[in-house]
Length: 570
Image: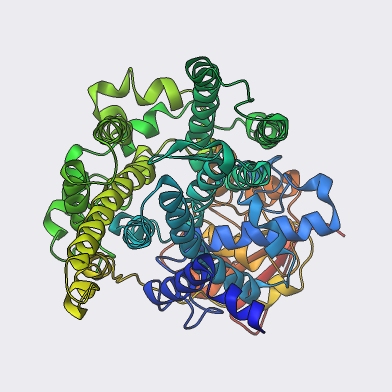
């Protein structure tokens, strides 16, 4: 009991518990009705809930078919049409059906925010900031207002492995910003854990994984340069890394590289989209985006409605990291526990990441974003430069942590001059003012729409199926409905539109007629489910009442206002 009590009072036990409670509160009402609602909108959350369910299902039943998903039938490598969230596959092995998929998604959504805070806290503590500074910076990083616009993108919110991996790697190498390399603080186990977390983060998707991989390569290059220089300057015969740490680094690098290349194979084989230059141009935000809050922010949503309306795509261009964070980071350039040269390096890195965030908005991106990301196909998900705000926010948080840590240090020094020598209540409360200000700014107003119920036919039909109406916005819900049987479905909507999906919708616009039936039979579709309550205003509004006897197909009206057409010839 005593050991358990000591463990529960450990700093990181309290950080984990606090992060979980804070994530539940700041993402509320995500867990209010987790079986029926999702944050932000119905579409991307439905698709990503299907992704997690599919990876878990297929890895249990037939792992060799992982990338040949049941959606986008008969397309090959269809699981590579966007970030795969493969790292969440173990969760997908638990339960089945749409409701369980939504429950799983909502829990992971909350846990992803908790991991952002845990990872941010661990990294900034390892760099050398105190507990208060790390707490303020972690909350500011994990719940920056711009994250609210990404509430429908679990692949973007799931970035907590990045700071956590960096913290573990720094801990394993005995390095911090305040103390540099310390030989006695090295630990190969922490370095190995850091590489494993980095590999897991990469498995979630390339939209965040590619920039993270660039950073890891940069760290390895820096180590390769710094280690010999340090040994020569200090003339220390002891190995700087040691054979265990060196082994962990070599094996960790190989694991991350092998996993990245292995996952990239189906993405390269499914090249349905070329280089994403056109989309990069479209999604590149203007500089003023860094001062505009998203509609989902309770504090800045209404106040910034005017500036937000001038943006071409507000969902990916409202990039405010928080005015409190800006103020703390600015203060951190003047007063900080970090050394002056370190602050200047952080400022230079901040400028670089801001330029990358602007994409082609900074001198057409010719020497900045495009050489790094412009050659990747659209399925890699690096076509949205605004998501580089992750790195901008992290650097601002590190600067802010230096300012808060210096404030706490000065407060403690002042308190030591008191008689008796301890802070009074007002002085103690003053050290938490930055945290309270950050919390006020990150309150959300995110909508949580109710997911439509699964049609009964989706629980019984096992043949290749098309569900009508079909659209780029809407097919994601159909993908979620398929998580009971995982029957092949021609519907699908991913990170980018495929030519086959556009051709499909055009070919079946007049269904049921001879041409559309022949097309569907040729592609292998054997059943069509028509949802009467969703076809109003579409090309299929009257499809449920058209005579089909001459077409060689059958029609069955079901109890839940759906129509089932069977195309297979007897």
